[in-house]
Length: 338
Image 1: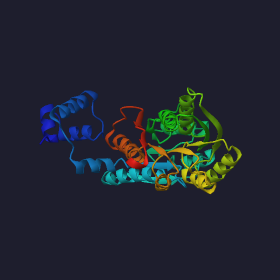
Image 2 (image 1 turned 180 degrees about the vertical axis):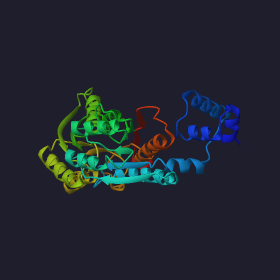
Image 3 (image 1 turned 60 degrees about the horizontal axis):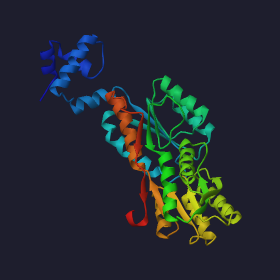
């Protein structure tokens, strides 16, 4: 077993010097630091877990988690992934401050971020794509707070890393899938979450790009439900009553259950081809009732788990992300392979 004493003896320095280098504390000359780190790497030195935990606790790592999860069942698996990862890191003194909100109100998200700013070393956030929030993210980073966007990203911020799906590809996949299911053509109604969310806009753009190649497919109407089931029910019902030519529905984000309930209330489940996202319990229920033909799955548990893992590696081990985007692959799910 490689010990601090062995590294010290080989480098000709004290054990205290090696300890300060390994645990990144105290002043050590740059050339000595480089010598010790190189020797530790050559010998394959692994820090003692108990010692590493003690050192980490002295850094007081605190992570803020801010998600638009109220009323959105998709985030249950994201939260589960974050929580299980955080529990594993509790030995290192890692603490989590949880904040959630409903929908995508800019002022609400801004106020929560302001409240967290002086309390955390890192932030995992599902952000609203708005200049106010982008500026706030940049201020967090400038203040030395490590920021990871999860499930959704924003335009041109200083955030260190994004963990989530490729939304453009998700939309393109949905468009291709719809054309495979009904090659004869479709008049399409779209229920999207919010144009304030970058991922929702990207997913719609990917879908539009794909179906634009086929003149048999036309978007008739687009409605926003703010990822809310009640709003989704109302807007879907009105859309289908007004545009009776619609024979396909693309649900871009959440509010799937509300949209499907509207379809059932109009007894149109046999007249529509519906494609949605994710496998929350109510969506699976609608697939079993043959209301939804297929969904695209974006690995929410892994999104949450990976986001917390990246934060831990940075706060405790000083390891920066090896890439700015960690993308989860979109997967097509039908009833038979759930």
